Picture 1: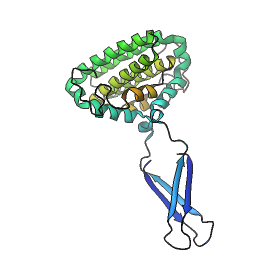
Picture 2: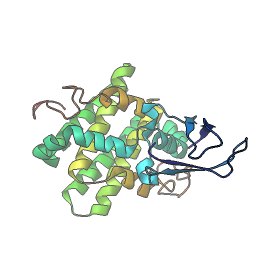
Picture 3: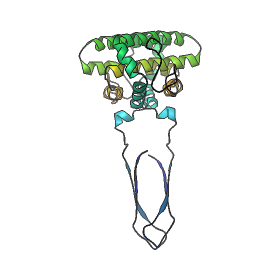
Picture 4: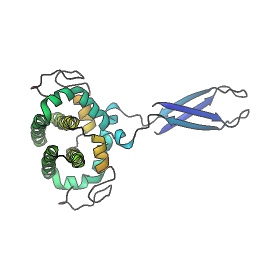
Length: 133
Length: 133
């Protein structure tokens, strides 16, 4: 939370004081940049959970694989909009599988990458190039 | 932003007033649930961008494929911790490829899924089960 808290007394010399209070938040995020992992997983759950469960993990994983193929194809091409869509699709299918498998992705990511690279434990990875990750 | 703003005047009758100001935020999120798509992409960029660029999209995609295989294997198993890790790894490799391809994933997800299912345009999908998505 970063911003300016502005407090203007509009009466002085008496109690109780009443104040005009403004909080101007410089970090007010745009809807896109504010999208949290948790919110996205809930959003995907609301949209698709019943269908995902009916389809099961195996069937849902097949859809993910199809999307991964489309992403590979888009990465070879020059259509920026299509590329953006294919990334969104792969992520959506991953999140949907996580819902069926009952995995909280925000917790998973925080646990694995929250303290830096899981290989070298630095925030700027110093593992060698052929090492994983 | 939801909470209580507490303003205590500690001198009255003189100007300028000085105040003790507290803001108690009831919505203070835990680090995991607050993790945004944008923050995660920046975090992954900081950790791996130089190595990702050196490896290129093709080489990085190969790592993603390896992780997808490990996720498939984990989905068949009973190790919950390992499953959580494999989801985190696949997402990390996807984000890292998006960095090299210069795709903003928060924007991509917001554009494709922000207004509901891209198929039926509802927030609870009504597309038939065999339709995509």
